[in-house]
Image (cartoon, rainbow, N blue to C red; front, top):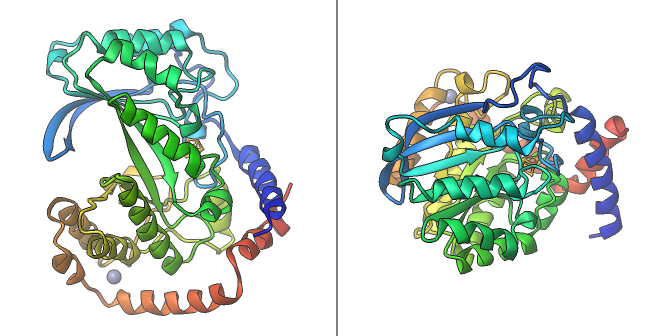
Length: 371
Ligand code: SF4
Ligand SMILES: [Zn+2]
């Protein structure tokens, strides 16, 4: 593959992605209040844990490059926020009578917890110091892997000691080309592996995210890409990847592609095939599908993965059951008349893809959307 060509495409994609970013945070938003805080329960290593889920209002993802990602739109644009304001947001999430029941804390920032320009070191230190006083055993943050380094993890370790810091990292795909021009992420395989090994060295962990059907891929390519990525992670020792079916959200490059009629979010049949094929190929791997990403009522502004109106709800229910019981035969037995339309669409797409490479598709898109 011509590296210069890929670089040129990425420059154009980057420009386009950034030009579309529009922060949905109102100009008069209170910078001392988090975007959200609530308690729920999460399943972790077979156990149900009491979680406090916090979304802080912070500067947007430093990279903000991914073609399908709406998170930079849900963070602050160029507004100044002080470390004290972020600390006040965090502190306001505690001090409740049931604080002692918290077993795990998920701390989302719509970007990179380890990037100091997003979350200053003094804020990280304050957060670690506080968490060290709680009963929580786990704390989850999210970050691109290039911001995870020895010094950052050593600071966390100093306060968290035997608590487990889990960094959610969006690898999205194990294919370099898919990450480069289909997702347009700045996450590399090298930085991902480095962050993973470093985290393990400190007794911490990572949560690896994979995407089902990133932009420009066909349904068949999406299945192969995700199953291969699950295999890659399995070889690396990561047996619990988190899978997100791609949704098209406003103010993203993906949404333009969708409006051009060149992308639709994956059929649920594709999602089901990823689950069954990976279970057959890597039975020791237990990928978990994020069900919320499939629900239109939770993603009102987006186009989510779906089948026809008659069977979507029941296929989603089957996927919920599969997340819990891993029963391949049961998931395979789910069927509906629209499955034939799906197969037909795949056949047409496969024929097209056999003569139009991924690079060609991206170039073609950019001929009309380049800035
Ligand atoms: S997926 Fe992660 S790295 Fe990519 S733009 Fe979204 S927040 Fe940033
Ligand atoms: Zn159907």
